[in-house]
Length: 177
Image (cartoon, rainbow, N blue to C red; front, side, top):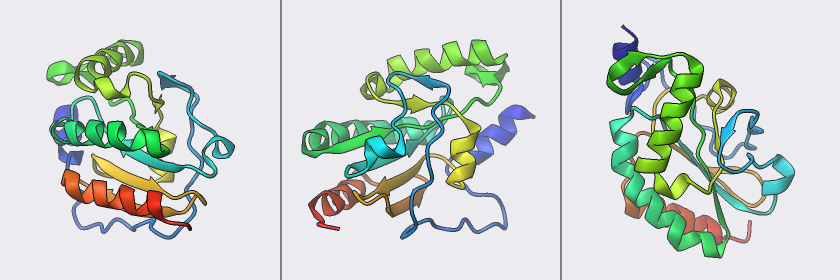
């Protein structure tokens, strides 16, 4: 049953529920208590920076399919000031949908990040349900792009063509807002 529920989240929103966009609103604070890699930046740390939040899961096929585009985007725009934070959460499973205790799943998550999302090795990866709740995430991948003033300029649930994400990031990086 857990596998069915988890797979249903990948690339789809809850049946009958329209997800409310956060575009134009201040970005909620990120919870960074448990994390992989670097410490999750505080609100003060990201003030004045353009931030891309890439919400993903270790089992998500669409997330893995989008990761080469996201990696290329990070490589291209990080020198221009783009910061990436890649929130995820624990789902109680590991490979093949096998049930797992939190510590086992965390080790598995680390392995998946290091082998399939290499570009996230040196980036903050907060592991928290709180971030999903604060941003209203009900499908993955989800992309949230935050401008230098802390306002959300892009809130996109599901796969996103690399060229569209690139254009959005470029627009926000070049903006004086």
